Image (cartoon, rainbow, N blue to C red; front, side, top):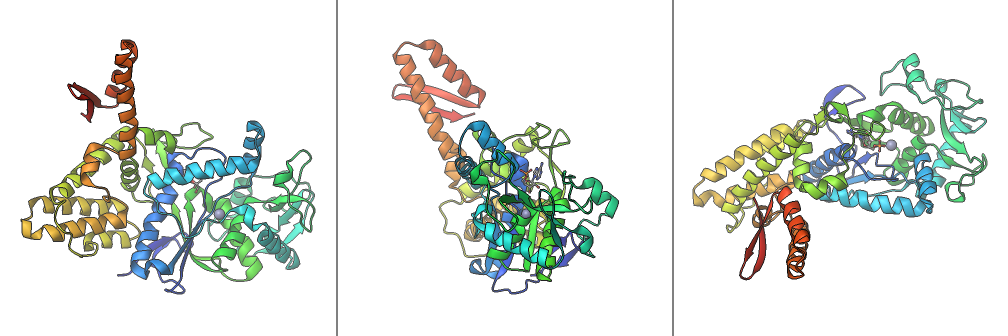
Length: 457
Ligand code: AMP
Ligand code: ZN
């Protein structure tokens, strides 16, 4: 079955044909790790995780190489470390760990490779040197700049004209800029900047610009031309446009053959972003909702469409998953037949990752499973599990699901034990507070002769 993907570069849906089916390559721009990620930031990892799963199914797990980077050098990181009074590496390691845990809770499997920008400074310097040698870059007052007019087809990804590009580019102050659209490849170190954020280069001490990081990591870990390059819609310009400029002018080859971009997550119809301050952190949400429920909610819209993050979306997602797990619960003791994924779900995903349709197919399958005769149960169980594995859903023990998230159960057990202790100590105010707090989460405590137990109501 063909996989069709919408390519931002050609502005159409195309059949996906890898350069080499034995080594399918995909790169997705990862986070800058200086604070907690919000649920909008989870949209790219979840969307591309789904594509990773689909590619692995089609080409074989060992034939797909997926790299998602970590940006661990950047102005915001330097500022966050200075504010916390901690070394940069401590801040980045801390927030990288939390990021990976958070998206892991959303069922995102580890990419094959996780390159870090700071491990590839030499590769960045090599590309910049090549660009300077070929007349595509020049030393300016504050570092090295890419010479935009030197590239005839600059702007081909975003389709912006020159005036729009100049207006859209964050115009960095650099007296040495030859053209307003030129952008930084290397930034000279400024007085007072920490030692850990400076590297030696032919142009003096400094650090790389953001765009060159990805050009170097893509080349180092995947190659000069890759199959798929992805990220959020906001990265098309300038980030991806500039990655293309750097890589293609340095190597004379296309950087990526299919460019994929996810749409934005909004809240109350406004884009969710740190600068607007209307963010919901994944870390916080996970205290109240199961990661699988959040994954389901993220997949309920097509990845290219906008999605509004609301409580009712989460409640609906949870209710649908409850129904799906109930279907699994009924057949939990039968041995699953080796069916492979159902065609309906597979076809939907092959059509540019049509997740709303895939989820509708999964629900229809659960309805059929609920009506099926026992002799058909192994087949339905096989189909549901295979569809779930492709979508990153339904892999938990259905009894566990019915009882609630296991790690959450530990937390609740501890609170219930705390209440028992408070009552023993005759601290009834504290005991009541715990009962009230749990009731607010929809958890009821039941006191019996053998102690206290709890359930979700
Ligand atoms: P940032 O931390 O802003 O650099 O974003 C990291 C990644 O998350 C990028 O790929 C962005 O495109 C993506 N992103 C940020 N905000 C949103 C949002 N509200 N909806 C979808 N993707 C987003
Ligand atoms: Zn990038």
